[in-house]
Amino acid sequence: MKLKSERHGSVVVMGMKGKVMGGPDATVFRDELKNHLDDGIRKVVIDLGRVDWMNSSGLGILIGGLTTVKNAGGEMKLARTTDKIQSLLMITKLVQVFSTYETVEAAIAAFSE
Amino acid sequence: MLVLDSILTSSQNTEHLLESVRVFREELVKTGEVSDPSALLEFFADLENRLTEMPSGLRPGTEFDLFGKTAMLLASAVDEEDILAAMLDGLKAVLPYDAAGVYLADSEIPLGVKNKHGDHGELSVLVARGYSIEENKKFRQKFDDGIVGWVITKGAPVIVDDTKHDDRYIMLRKGTRSEISVPIISRDVIVGAINLESDTVSAFSEDSLRLLENLASYAAVALERAKTYGQLIEARSVERELEIATEIQTKLLPDEVPQLPGYDFAGFNVPSERVGGDYYDFIPITKTDVGIVVADVAGKGFGAGLVMASLRSALRMRVEMTYSIRAVMGNVNRFLHDSTGPERFVTAFYGVFDTITGRLTYVNAGHNAPILIHSDGRIENLETGGPLLGVIPDAEYFETIAEIEPGATLILFTDGITEACQDDGEEFGEGRIIEIVKEHMNNSADEIAHAIEREAVRFNGAYSPMDDRTVLVVKHL
Image (cartoon, rainbow over all chains, first blue to last red; front, side):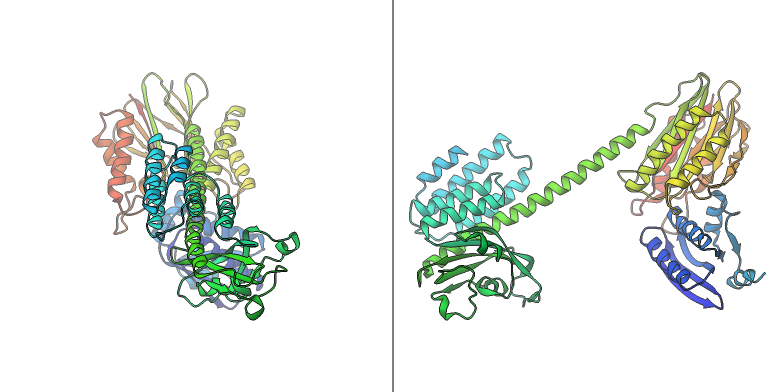
């Protein structure tokens, strides 16, 4: 997995790329997310548009991220969920737990609503 | 061992000694005293090479005692420290000294490479003779300190005829006037040095050097052997722990399926690693009611195995306490949430099957929906329930009823089956499961379950890794 963060005003967009499968990826994601929270950021968008593949451990990364952000009093949204991820969210019935958006812009805009 | 000893004392030349060692090796392998003959044979080949390279014309008696006994000790189970100590003690009769030490480098230095460790590397003494307690305390020194430091960094031997006229000499022991030091080289790596000190000026000759270099090659074997044995023992203990974990986990899975009139049950699990994260169970509730569980713990290995074990006991305990399926799931969810981190979760399906009515009351907690193929071919996905377990502490779970009428087949599985994946990214999916079941409709539940797993493995191909695979099949005959 490759991870790249971009600031859009008060929102950070964390873009995941490639295969997301837990293990070392989880550590990379957790550390970077923690840096953002330490910087005072409370609005996080995870851009999943360039994720090729995600298994259930990869899903664990998203769940862990959501819990961390919520515990810090923030919000995390998913953007550009692929069919595979959408189906994982359906099976695990996490659709109600995650807010998903078709574009990054829509996810960012949703914070100001 | 005694046999070898007597052969050695009568050995008068290298050839004879070599022969003795060969006889000894064959005896050892034959008697089965050694559990790993391949490691032993490799060691003996090395030892024989060294003996072949030994200089001819060694003085009979003492030198043979030294090398022969060392060879014997190396072939036995004696640890390296005792071997090196015996070497130094045996050496004294052949090459008199007043103090001696075997030093080890804390990092290995490849031969012929300019030493970069310089100030960082340190030497420690493994075995010493002839030093006072205070002198012993001073042993730890840097690589570039003293004669021994020089020998270790350069990988070359040195004879110091008069310590008073050598800049490299650092006084460690009072009274030392001359010194000889040779590196211990094991597989082109400098691992340490043997150092002898004498109270007499010019106590060591070129002959002493040759002898000591030979002894150093034995010391190298002793240290190499200790390292190999250490690794072997460590690997064996990890292997043993894995075996135990596998054994425990196998016992946590049911060893038989329910035998109930009118039904055919089957279930099995293939872990992708030694310790898996999949769990399935048939829990007897009454004589005619049976609890059916299939679950998948995120991740693999020991961590997943531990969660799987605690899930099993949490579930079984709560099943005994309450008949309400959704209450059981709610409780287990909270328990897992409180006892695992946010990234660790479980997808689970739990249902109670009333074999009299054919009704399955179930909750699906984020698990791949079991497939119910009705007698008329209609497909029902058992989805109702709530989110996966262990993530949302106050999650609500809903239960519902599925009718498994005569002629219907229920298939429960984990994502290791549906996510079997071809190189082009295509997944095995649920459609293929349905096709296989329909093809094998007249076969037993066990045959159907194994056909599904077999086809998933074939679909995946030999080269991509697979997840744990679990399949349960319930046929209402």
